Amino acid sequence: MISLLIIVMLSYLAGSIPASIWIGQLLYRVDVRKYGSRNAGATNVFRVLGWKAGILTSVVDVGKGLFAAAVIATLRVDDLPFGFEVWHIETFVRLMAGVAAVVGHMFPIWARFRGGKGVNTAAGVLFALTPLTMWIALGVFTLVLLIWRYVSLASIIAAVAFPTTVAIRKFIFDITALDSSLLVFGILLAVGIVIAHRSNIRRLIRGTENRVRSFRLARGLRSRGELA
Image 1: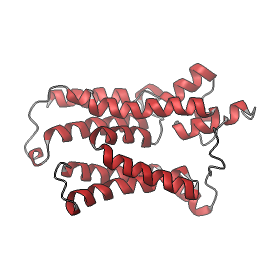
Image 2 (image 1 turned 90 degrees about the vertical axis):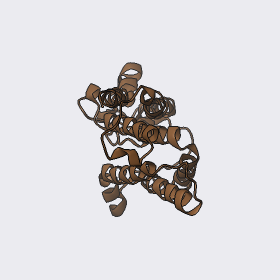
Image 3 (image 1 turned 90 degrees about the horizontal axis):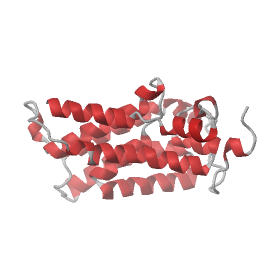
């Protein structure tokens, strides 16, 4: 259990790296939490600082999840407590590392626990665990975004699509390599992402949610001289 706790702690610290905040402050001298949606996530970085900062932030955020699930989780793990043997131990540990990284992203110790909504970091975790399922979820995200142009709506539907796809592949197509822990994690993740987007859901219902007006490279408020 000691090594599992170390994995979780290291994954949390890695997930806590506030890419959006540090990139904004170090490269642009802008705190993205003061502009746009005031969220410390990649979407707001695209909106405030433009596509270069947005892509860099996205790469780091996805990388945190990949690093936690694919690297940190490979540290030696002691026997788990009774009851966890029903799941594949390697998958379970990688999921625990991933959960810790997502929690770190949402509540980063390096940024006074004010982080983003965890979508990109969660995507990194799941790409490390089941790439094909994640490509399907990413396809759903892209399709929803192209049709309705709401990043929040696309994120929510893609989050729900992940456990749905896992269930279909496991129980209908009988792909035994997909551990049941992935389905449980996917459901919990979907619930968490919906909760994290509750303010967006309210704006979607009211019709006031920010919409992607163009798929051209985002210039950002900074380059347009609109920052106060």
